Length: 206
Image (cartoon, rainbow, N blue to C red; front, side):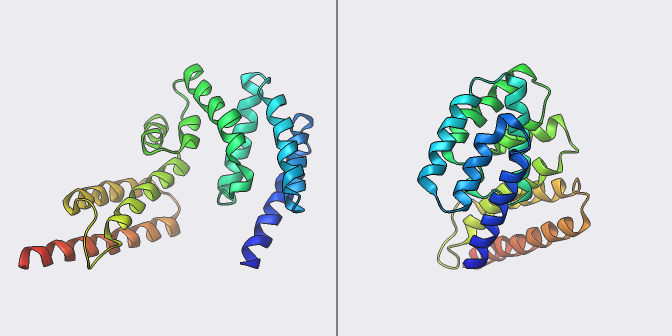
């Protein structure tokens, strides 16, 4: 637990350091700094000030901040403190939606909206987008894993459909260039496929 908290504090400190180098982002940097020190109430007050200022920026300024923050959060496995709910709903998500309207061929905003539909669109627009590809794979594998988590007492969902999803995921894995990640995903697919296939075999025999 303490290791996890220590890592969070380090990420907040690094976010504060980077953001403070851009004058327009200083209030966000201060938010991270205060949160890293455990001063949640003061941090949220600074965040509110930042949102009030940032919503008045041009779309290009908003895009620059959103792109940096989402990528930084992705690199650090997205701790919630970096992307608090008020920031997402009042600044980041409206920015991504406007970005899509203005640039319909841009894949990045779809990637960060992070729903299966948006991730599929991000990959369609940019097949080389490994971040979107990995996020979609994780979404789909999580769904199949959830279907199996009550076994042997019952199967949630449709096992035949889950096998089709695993086939789709296997095809997506071909677009992953990182050999270690590719092997990891292939192992997860194989393990889930065995669980689902074994369940179907058992059902057929009973």
